[in-house]
Each structure stands twice: as C-alpha cells, then as structure tokens.
Amino acid sequence: MEKQRCFVGTAGWGIPTRYRDDFPQPGSHLERYAQRLPIVEIDTSFYKPHRHDTYERWAGSVPEHFRFAVKTPKAMTHELRLADCEMVAEAFLQQVGGLGEKLSVILVQLPPSLPFEPDVAGAFFDMLRLRTQARLVCEPRHPSWFDAKADALLASRQVARVAADPAAVPAAAVPGGWPGLAYFRWHGAPRVYYSDYDAETLDRIARQANAAAASGAEAWCIFDNTAAGHGLGNALEVDAMII
Image (tube, rainbow, N blue to C red; front, side, top):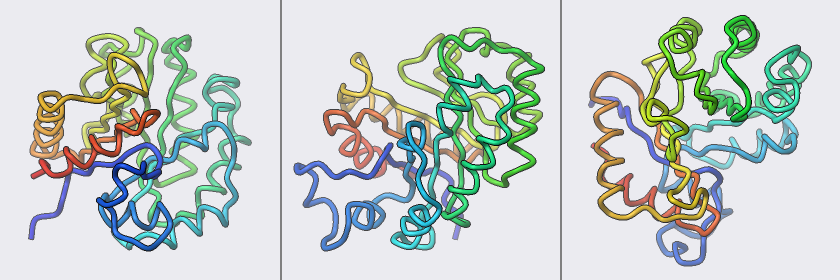
C-alpha cells in the first residue's frame, strides 16, 4: 500500500458546535479531532509555554499515526529576531519533547518587519537543526526572503518555506526552500483568520496539495481561518478531496 503523502488539519483542535456531529464522541476535543484528521498545528506555543507533561498528555490522547506541528515562541522570532536564541530554543525544545515521535514539524513564523540576513538566518537554523530532528518550516513575511539566495539558504538547511494565503508577495503563495515538505497555511481571505473559503477555492487548494504530494514532497495543508470556526469545515472538505 502506498504511503500517504498529503495531510490536512487546522491550527488548534477546537470543534465548533456546528461540526460536533462530524466527530466521534465521547472524548476531549483533541481526541475527537484526531479520529477524523491526521495532523494539527499548535499555535498557542507562540504566546506562552506549555509544560513538558502537557505535551505528553496531548501525545497520549491521539492515535499512533497522528502528528503535531508546533510554532516557536515569539521570543525567538519577534523579540530576539533570530539572534542569540539558544536558551529560549532549548527551553522550547525540552517542552515540545513531550510529544515524542509525534512531533513532526517546528514552524518558525517571522514578523513582517524582519528582513533576510544570511548570516543571522543561517546561524539560527543551524542552531535549531543541531537541537532537533523535527522538520523545520519557516513562514517569512518580509519581501526580501523571496528570492533565490534566501531559498537556497533554506534548502541547504533542510528548511521548507511556507506557502501562505494571503501571500505577502506573489512568491509567498507557493512552497519554497527544502523541497521535501510542502507546507501550506491558509489564513483566510479576504479577512485574515475569519473568512471562509468557497468551494472553488477549496478545490484549488486540494489540487495544489495533491500536486505537491505527487511531485514527491510530503504535503501539509493547515487551515488557520479558525476565528469564526470556518477552518475546521474547510479542512474536512479538502481532506475528502485528498488522493
């Protein structure tokens, strides 16, 4: 049997009331979510740390095949701006280590004000790479990150670049960096975090993810338009279209 290469999930595992019948009961939201979707992105780690045993508990409540992506703390990206992050990184990685083998991806989302500086970026990703075996994904938002030099640096460190919607620049709409992982983040458009995606867009999203997987990459498709509850419905629709 061919290994699945395309996965769909959301940022967080809340289940809005209108989708409660789409998920088995009983169980916590995470337990129920994990019966329908194979991946989830933890974004709350950006704002506050979670204890090692909290991550352990989450890992213990999902099936063996289930995988997590976890977002790095804002202290690393928005406060220290990738420089001198060793202590923060080690604390973060100790915490997320509670997920064990179910930790698959570490997401580094950069502030729009942070330009590409090769020495800083290279040192940062080298530092992370030495400390974790999880796949690394970067979501830059400053235009200077979307050129061949930045792409080559990310690829050389095996860091995938997020394909995001809305895209900061046209090149941000397609995956870049390391080609082994195509990581899509659908934030909602035109209203970020709130807007629902229509059927035509969801069909395009599914085709884009399937094409990435067919090219040999593992594809992750994360819906982050969860503020009004649309992300989960969008994820379920796209998951049904995954080959």
